[in-house]
Amino acid sequence: MKTTFAVLMFLAALPLAAHHSWNAKYDENAKISFQGVIAKVEWMNPHALVWVDVKDATGKATTWQVELAPPNTLKRSGLTKEMLKDGDPITVAGWLSKDTPNVAAGGTLTLAHGQVVLQH
Image 1 (cartoon, rainbow, N blue to C red):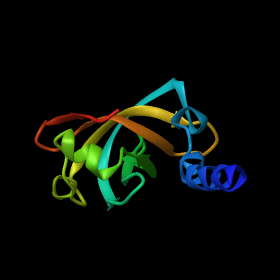
Image 2 (spheres, rainbow, N blue to C red):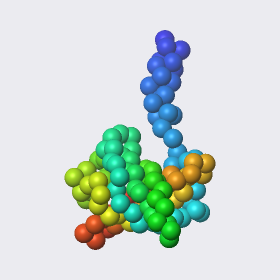
Image 3 (spheres, one colour):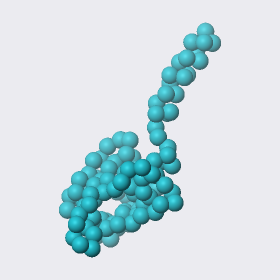
Image 4 (tube, helix red, strand yellow):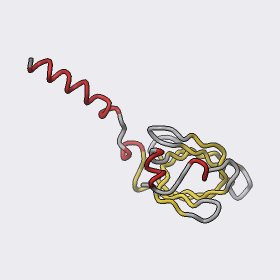
């Protein structure tokens, strides 16, 4: 009976182990900030994603993928999906991915109308 209970507890804990650590993917010492326009938004669990087209000084555009908090956390922070519209300007301050170019975790978002959303 004890073995069965131990196996059941192990299996119940597997979904918790599957969730990745934020520090495993992003470098807390590699802060980044950029401005651009929203190209795409995916409002989903476990994390919402937003793609931002950023132009450099020559006008060349690079698309950045920004990982956000889960949708419920964003909503509690005052951010809804409807506030992130394709083509709207946005400023992102966050942290670079440790191993993937043009990927960042968003910490602070400044929306088109100036609202600042702190979500980490």
